[in-house]
Length: 408
Image 1 (cartoon, rainbow, N blue to C red):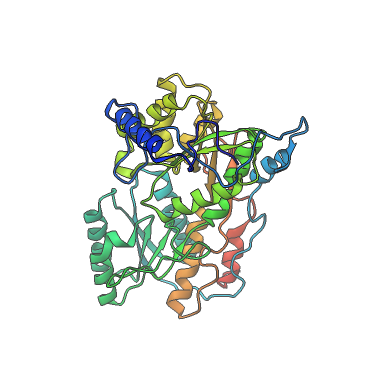
Image 2: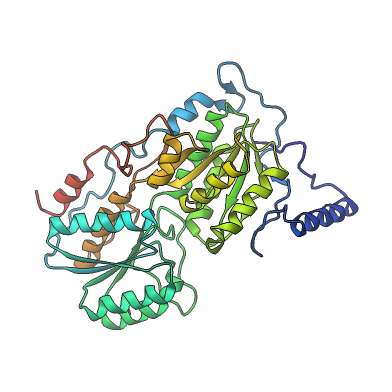
């Protein structure tokens, strides 16, 4: 991966750097910059690289000094792991468990699908699962946890909710002796473990895919699809550990792509997913017309960026998203700007949350990694699931879990 000729050298003198800063401020003031919050970078053309290469180095056979791009593309389109690699230690499932599930926002498929997985588990185990919508509002999320406790829930589960946002609920659950478990945060193994801040409470565990490895797959897809010549606009959000892990993996996946160029991260926050992100995206791409790929850190953001790119007439850009939301998969199916999506099996996530919950309630050691080797893949037009369906791994993991729980 290399920088383009537009990337300012770190060896430039202070005069040139000052001039660049003046230019960037002027761009933002004129509405042509990144439009990001105080945590974001500017919308200028500065770029980053993990290795300083020169030229694409690619051959007519899709190979370069960086590797076989065709092989990287094929690898990215294959599920990891290819077979069930979840727990092997049995865990006796208790019956009659009442669970309240609080989603981050039930308008987002990535929040709902794991909860649906837990509802599927409930039918098998005879559990009572109640799903409440956090609605993207911390006050509502805390109120939902308190409601679950008042209803006599034996366990509370949250989906994609930062534990810092629900400290009131976590304190009440601790007082009541009710465990609070989680999924889709990226703060537990196999991802870097993020311990609670001093004086704050965390979850008993968090189930998620290996976000770094998934990001690396995305990098391989981009390198392979571009035959080692991608010019990537990198958009990211510092709010979520899972996104930062994906970003790190993406850059690792592109390290050997000597003809690929990656911009400095264009940061935004979730509250900007709407008109501000539309403006930031169009502004950056207009200022950097050489960009032909764009990484969007989660599908709700990509769902905003795709129409923004269409409206701006920037038809040369391929968007790559993350989550596997049906709307985004339809963009791919219809060849509407988005070309690929990093997906993970959210139904499996529900089953894995249930499995770890069983171990938690039984006083057993949790299975390692806590994400239970949740399957993931990159989807493009070659391997999309049937229209209207979420992507799920083809191996029969439900039967594996049922066997572990002594049901078969």
